Length: 261
Image 1 (cartoon, rainbow, N blue to C red):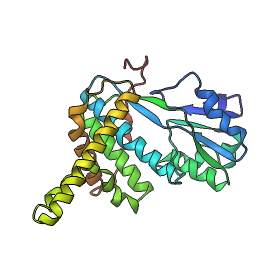
Image 2: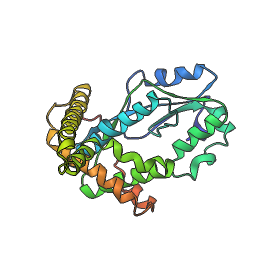
Image 3: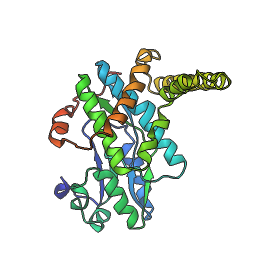
């Protein structure tokens, strides 16, 4: 496709991404600043009708996106999403073209690093994408989430071990269990657990309202969602092998119409 592109600014988006009418104007405008080399976006997950699809969308909206925004708020600029990339042609050529990142497991992350090494900035666009999540079976959902966890471990091997602190409710529940034998700590642990649960519920309902989805439709899936992400994190410590062929076969087909909700 690159050989057929006619203009200097290149915008790339995944096939399961839906954008607003102002997408191109929003992602290209930061490139007017010559110090900006790449513009990327975050996205909201919108599930198909399957339960596993809902679990997948919840992982994106209630764990992945908040983590990205929290890290960005505190100065981390290493986030680049392959779901949407916008850059100048000569910027891509300056870092060696597509070949410079094609052989890397996380090509989007590699692309961002190469651009920053050129002295240019990566900008997170305010345009929020919509990504359709289609996971018909638990097996495909588990395979994808373990693969994503492996990707995080490859990119951030040291901090990956501390990722469990983002699993708020399971961690707070463990604290209640461990403090049961210490009456002096039990009351504090219970109070922290209650606060954590209320915060988790608030995050869930805010996402429902922002996404214009029924407020209580996935409420009963919250414990399953939090336990599944803990399982995927733990599973990664036993293997780093990635089956690219299986991952490609498991990718959902490109949607032919916008999500119904």
